[in-house]
Length: 155
Image 1 (cartoon, helix red, strand yellow):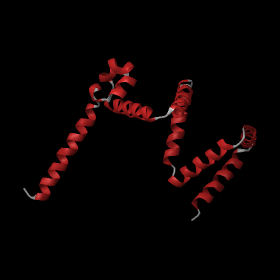
Image 2: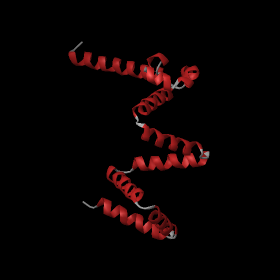
Image 3: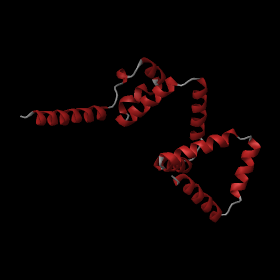
Image 4: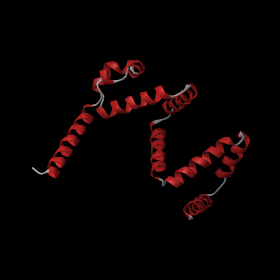
């Protein structure tokens, strides 16, 4: 067996091993002490969770543990908002998020900057801007959207 074929064989074995490890999920005992404490209400059902869901929850717990008090309060607020949504509202929110993720990086950055500037406006000014947008016709909205895209796509 040549050196190259041994290397390929090793890569195949490691890839298979990694896929198998991923499919097994995360054992409760493999979580950190802080994660186990945070996720204690999930302990009884942990082994029945889908491995991908276990990893998602473990990553979420790790992010939570890294947050400061202000960030945790904001996350709690977002979670309460999410729980108050209907299934249709949640589906629409997921779709908008996926649309955002599909945007080119420069468009995503511009949207985030626009949102930051919007949040910095006084509440009265934000209300006026929302009202002006509501009064636009679909054609006017399309023209504005096209103008924005043209500005973003200029070199």
